[in-house]
Length: 472
Image (cartoon, rainbow, N blue to C red; front, side, top):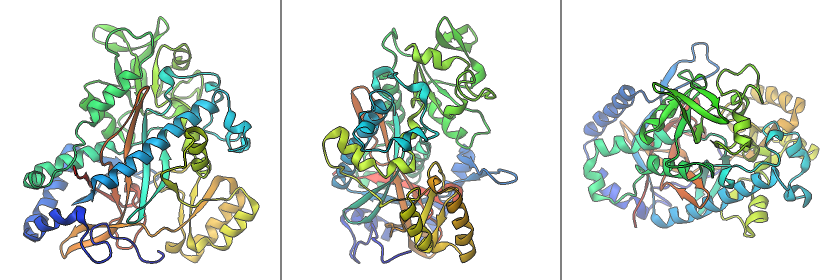
């Protein structure tokens, strides 16, 4: 890790304002009581079934995501600036997708290289010349944000396909409210519990124009073996809508309908947690058993809303990410409020040489990677690991981007010995409907539980904590 880091609680050795009321409460607490509470939280998460699967392991076992009981606290003014930047970025991404699949003005203007789109696996020619209901492509966006200083926030990546983690945000808050109700009477924290209600409202507002009455919304899951299945069932339950699998769906009179005890019922909006390739075996992967045959024809006829729209993955590709500030400015006419992390495109020969020469100082990621898989954290890697990764880079340079190792901010976690700083990131969630962008005040804070570690992903041993946005 490079240089010193900014601590969100202590700042430059003096307690920062957002944490003052919490610190006052914490100082009066008994450590043994807090240890007991930490154990209770783990038991609650285990009882509720808040687990995820770890892919790529022989037994792909279910794991509990560790929960830390010290909240991450943001002031109202810090949050307002962040929310403004997220809204601007989300609007830019949506406009970019609409343009890419229609007029392609940004490609004609030379702002984004045509090659990056034409050779992108996430770009779907099947979406060309089509605009989804209400013109919304990304109904739910998770923007990963890191902090390096008092006023320095950067977007690490955009999640425009099917961002996950919102159930942990909601359960973290629920757990804190149960364990420390007195804290919330002392400190005024903005609510996150409205998210499921707002999600349903946002999805209903995105229904096809020909929908009559209250739109029928469902959550489409690949099934119980998916790593985020807990979240799929949780969100369906919280919204009060049906959780369905591909085999529950069929085309009826030009609409998608689900099987019920009273026959088939027409659906208006599908919140799908199934990847593009598995959505429709007649259009994409013919082997898929997870989607609904014919759904793309129904979609193109304007009789169903699919959220997020197929083909949105081209906007969260890590090579496209490097152009995002220019993309935002192209469509909004304003400079991007939230900056990108400096990004090196390994597809460019000179840049590749620089990356190979400086592997031990950089973080290298797969363009389509997620969950912390397939990446190299140079400063934490051995010489052999760097040499092995260099071979992959030389074989497929366009498959990778590299970034400097940032000094991520720290937030305290609770340990038996007291509070200890650990690195964090933040994933706020934005809901986009035809007339509105709604951003839940807070988001999912992921924390690297090992001292000095910069990898916060749950699949790589990270944990989560409640994120507080103060009311004033």
